[in-house]
Image (cartoon, rainbow, N blue to C red):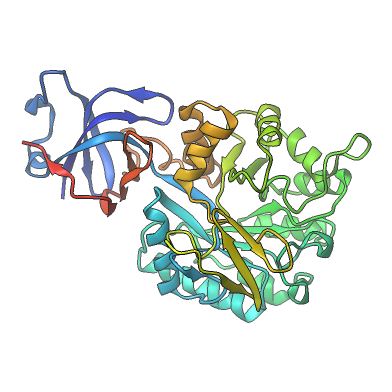
Length: 396
């Protein structure tokens, strides 16, 4: 069914545009027509679309894409690797503008990895809104930089894991690994199996990181966190990440994982478009209470917008994507346009999803309506309203 959204203002992925009528058909944007101050010229809009016209008060922006989502809505993917869990997580994050995400499984047993892969394959088959693929964060990591990942499950890649990574029914496949524990030959094999390789939870030196990049790795998981640091005589993983002109970096802008000054330096060092916002979200996202949860038998305690394991480590985030965008403006001083690109266009480009990240004819209608406080009022995935803070008024 065709529909037309009349918006006060919209961000096309590059710049803000004035009032317009955006026509959607079969989940895709088929027309965008400017509206004069006096009102909508009905002749500009396809007659079929006029049967379903909605006026949205606020600013429409491209939907946010998050490559690292462990949980939300009280659900944790590791604890319940099922299609139902994925749906709960997606619904929780849709409230904050996420229209595309990779359910993320942290280091676990191979049997859990298999169940997670089956769940994502089923979710994709069922066309669960927002599911783009899967992110395996581990288990092939460095023990000294493991964070809250359970050491007992950290291991070398076996045939069983490689069989999972080689599957062709998982959408986008992303694997975070430590290159000092995974050979260049294995990284090349992963890339041959259409796996996007991110580097992280690693104590690798600069040379080892660059060898992994040469082998086809193209990203860094939560830059600065759980990786060898940047020093005057040893650039480490951070130095290699900042130097690389090709690789993308995920960045957690929550005020806890990375100091604002450090984040600013990274963004200035990288080529524009190579830093993308991620949440590393855990079950409390979308929940109003401060309840704790368990991660591999370790209690994780929420204190405001911070999560810590009882052993002291940061344990993911209660960050959401619209919060990350607003933090990027408020804490880092970036323009709203660039913060929006870091949440939508750049991760879409990293995942090679050219139909996402922009509002333009021919793009998928993944859209987020922001109110005057730049919080989410409504979220659309492929033209379907999946979240609304209230009932949008119909245009007359």
